[in-house]
Image: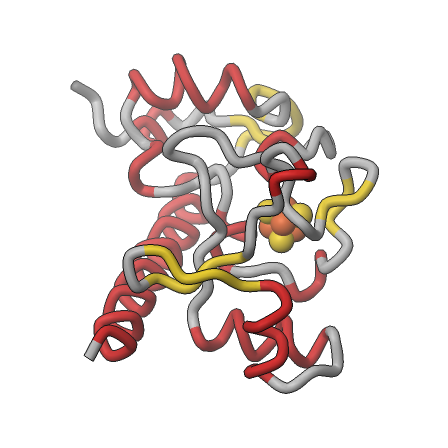
Length: 154
Ligand code: SF4
C-alpha cells in the first residue's frame, strides 16, 4: 500500500466550504482539543477555560473534545450554515485537515477522503514540502493530545 500519497506531487486541494469535515461520521468523529486549542477557543469566547469546558466540551475515554449535541445530527456545534463560526480560533485538528497522517494512504485518500471532501482535486497543486509541514503539525498535535490526556487520566 502506498502510504505516502502526497509524494505523487499532484495533490490538489482548495476548501469548497462544504462543511463536510465538520460533521462527525465514524472514525472522523470528535474534534479533540489540546490545551493550546482549549486556550484559544476560551479566549475567542471570552470565557475561562473551566467554563468553556463545561459548556462546550465532553471527555470520552479520558480525551477532551468538543461536545456533540444530538439535535445537531453530527454537525460540529460551531458549524452554522456550513461555516465555522470560530474559524480563526479553530482547533489544530481542523486546521490540518485533510492532511492527516492517517489519510495519507491511497486507499483512504481515494475511497474515503476524496469522496467526502469536495475540496480535493480542486485548486492548486499543494507543494509536497507544505504537505509534509502540515503532516508534522498533525503528528505533533496527536502527541501533545496524548501526553496531555495521559496526565488528565492520572
Ligand atoms: S471547530 Fe470549526 S472547523 Fe472545526 S469541526 Fe467545528 S465548525 Fe468545523
